[in-house]
Image (cartoon, rainbow, N blue to C red):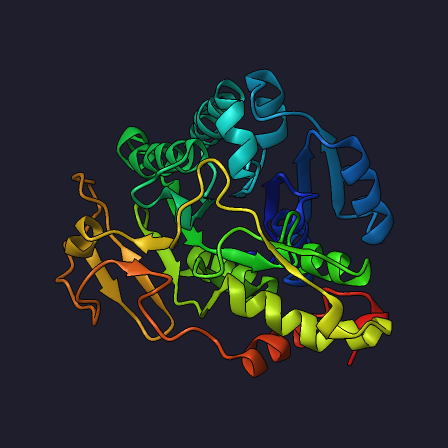
Length: 342
């Protein structure tokens, strides 16, 4: 993590769930300055109240769609963590023009600003939905990934390195199912489940942030870093949370019903972190996979395929977490109110 110490860092989307944790970690790791670019005024205000570091934290109101604003934000920056995106699958299905402007055009704007300023490194935050996408959000994030990776071929003699990290659902992030289920339980139900057989990847936010900084440390440019993640099925999660947390709010679990509402637009039954086609350029490490680019890059060294994956890496590729494991992870993450402590 020494790649951050003494550096000037920019975090886009830096008041969001992932972005705010990246911001705090960069400060903890000794960054000289951390600029947060965010179009959410309230989020920026709350972050500034939460992080008491007026000497090093800079809060910038702006949008990645605005190239002029980005040029100012990136001036003298060494490291960029790009977390700004429109992330909600259903909303993106109904608002694809907006998704393209932020997730695609915004990424291209930031890449150009990074090249102009010749930053040291650029890490973009992606999602499992970018692998063989079936939704607008996934498609725009895949194109965002490709823009970042291809930036290594645009940079000429510049030393800037561009890479991506790709992970699944982050426990307790904005829109996460965990607080949703808890609030429904607290209200006496019903708990709304899209499909009990649906599976998802799952990880604490600290591990997601670990991956981001690990990628920045080890990247050579052109890689997509994919963390190995546990999985769960939605039906088990709902039942587990009802049985585990209803008693903490003095409600009999037997009185809470589960309402099956069906998948929402753009949702798929099982998430995918690595597609079958991507296996051809995937290398496996102890804690993650690295997908190397298919395009030719000047400094890219071909790596032999070394992975235990016999087929695409999906949320049904491994045994899902048990009820006990789910409750333990939720409790350790501390994403629910104090009253929910069992």
